[in-house]
Length: 214
Length: 274
Image 1 (cartoon, one colour):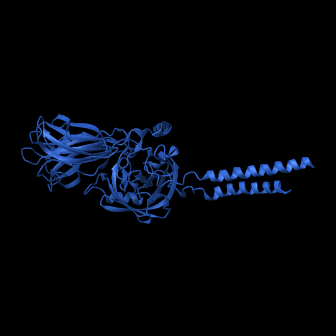
Image 2 (cartoon, each protein chain N blue to C red; image 1 turned 60 degrees about the vertical axis):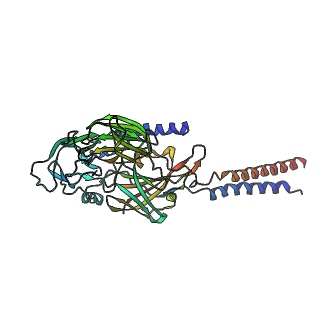
Image 3 (cartoon, helix red, strand yellow; image 1 turned 135 degrees about the horizontal axis):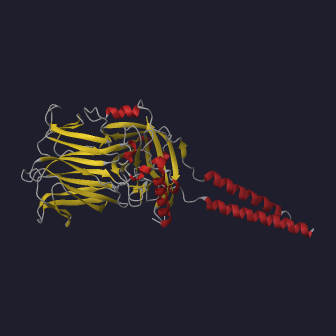
């Protein structure tokens, strides 16, 4: 009985320390895998994407008229994605539109397209919908660098490989990098994730996969 | 959306504007190119289309709308020849178009109200509309008199004549549209379900000839707005990280600290007692 204060002190320290260690071990992992492609100027015309664009030129054209390769389907076998793609635009205030159906992925038609010599091809898809459950990109956060992505556009497949997967707080989204058009070609796939704010019905983070031509 | 978050979005948008002078024009402008779409609205006339003497479309047929074409900014001599005609032969139609960096144009090979072939250029308004909305544009490019356009049972456009257009801002969804001769109720076109996508313009072209019984409609979509700055892509919370898991640990830590404090106090009191 005489030793209870010392026992309480030791037990208290162990409990507090254990709680801190437990939190550190079990809190959700941050999403920070791989390296985001550099935001550099487009490479010299020897770039293979430029050659691909050349092969996609309008028939018989010697002028630099290129037909936009409009994306129609996205496949990411590693996470079971095989989704229709439709064009979307930007609303007042800068928010990217998103298809009404959560199973359909949007392609930002004001940005880049496959085969162009520069610019990000930007896709946006639902992680889920309150009314209709999981969306096309529900598992985007599960993919890792090295995963293969195929985008069908202009009647042919364009193959990419994921280089990075990141979570960004929406309030601090590096929009100038995500939507950049004066950069070497890349594919940027956006969905939502992180904690969910039930008051607003929005997620607090964007999950973004960055890919380059395979 | 809560005001603080909206405020943050606006701040980001303003920063974006400050960072890039091209932010208010379509992103394609960054590469010094313009976008041109070509619509074929002349019945029974397959053609080849040339830009500055180079053939850019072969065997282009009635009711076809091209994918958007990306062209370096500049002046273009557009010539339309019968499909397969020699490049040096006299064109059916010819016009010169200025394509500016960031411009978005549609050129329609169409019929005038009197039924003569023509090249009619339209500037596509890429101004943004509100979130969840799109723009519905109707262009009269057919050999037909003035028309009215209905969305469902409501007349939304009155007395549209050849060569003219009218635009509406509508919620994303499907618009059941029909076209009647002005002042009449019987449809000469439709009803057809026109898809309207958020942040996109859907353009409906009335093409062909009323007297030739070739009146029909084709559609084009193009994106609205400048640079994107944000994306909301979920509303269910199913894919959320677990709700803040910190509190059980915080509770345990507080209990531990209290216990340690009590122990320390007990030791101190006992020391005093000695």
